[in-house]
Image (tube, rainbow, N blue to C red; front, side):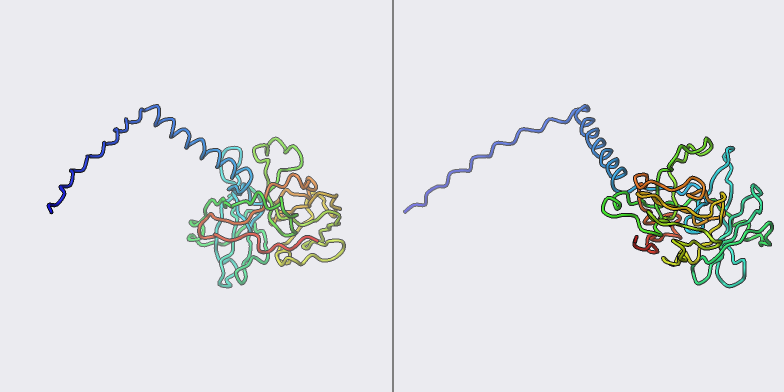
Length: 277
């Protein structure tokens, strides 16, 4: 028997060529992508996390920020130098003659800051003076955590000031401080310590190392319901609840969780807080 001859395969019809996209079509695609990215970024910033720059020195030494005077000049510079010759670098704020006393030294021991003192003069070597730098720490703020729980004592919170700030501070309506007093508590400062309902506040451990002063004629205060009392870690140079009172719970915007700048100081910020009672 003869073999059947196979029929030659019929060529598949070629797909029609895709016409090139016009300029308007490409522009529309890019615009859609940018709008989606913008909306996503706004959602994250509004409800999830936000990056925040420390605007002043009120939380030194935990968080360091350099304020500027009305002429755009820095009010202080940061120097790290072993002032008391114990082998650990201390943190020095050099106020550049803008304030008296000029130097504010935060002493470090076993890797932690344990006290501070102000000096009119300080015998620093030229190497230390040349190392002075402007520093504005940058942090990550968790903006949704307080949807699920109340703030805890010792946490560093970002909040809106509970009143219209004075004219010279209207460009800084958002503050950052440490939460100290909870609703219903009576807080008293007996220098250098804080007392809650007559008992020494020593937990979390950060309160054992921080020195508090009776600035703004503050002695004691009872925290109203749904409010919190906040204080700066740099108690000698901080505007906080001693000046303008407690912060309503609704004014608290988020929890500081991470310092990411400068890169040599990256650290978590919420490990020293304690549960609210």
